[in-house]
Amino acid sequence: RMDQHDLWPMEDELADFRTILESFEATNRRLAMRILSSFARKLGFDDEFFTVRHDPTSPEYQSTLRILHYLPVPLADLRPGEWRAGAHTDYDCLTLLHQRPGQGGLQVCPGAEAASRESDAPLGWTDVEPVAGTVTCNIGDMLMRWSDDRLPSTLHRVRMPRPAEVDGDRLDSRYSIAFFAQADRDAVIESPSGRHAPITAADYLQHRIAANFAG
Image (cartoon, rainbow, N blue to C red):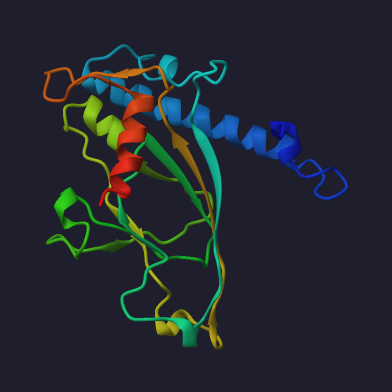
């Protein structure tokens, strides 16, 4: 079994990579908890309600910082209807997304229901253009469940570049970084009104992942 420390690049390969990334993850976590504390007050919870359920010192901690690379694609290989990421909602409580200016493609569909994922929902899709110094925040399904569906999760997708955005005979790479604030595995997601049955965050994630492969 490979030790987790073996997964980091060596210093002579990428100096300070681990230090920088762990600091960046901690900064994202603090920002996410500040935002979630605001939601907690609005929902009638204690200010620290979500903070104690996203505890980085706990062995049950499962929030994740993910570095995303959408690979370059030769235009000749593209087929109609392809997406860099199809329409979906995130499973977590809150996603913080960092986009690189000049590498757009993210679209959101406010107010869309889950049934609209396979087609353009009635409200239509809106581009979220990358802006330097701006963090895009998406509500996830965990928070939607915790709020009795008062805070709907954000339906979003990543489109392919439009013809005017392509230079040459291939689509360029797209890079972004996402922090997924996922409640600790042993945290119990309880719907205040009883609309949704209590479930641990670990079981909830497993249920959502399994649903992707159903059938």
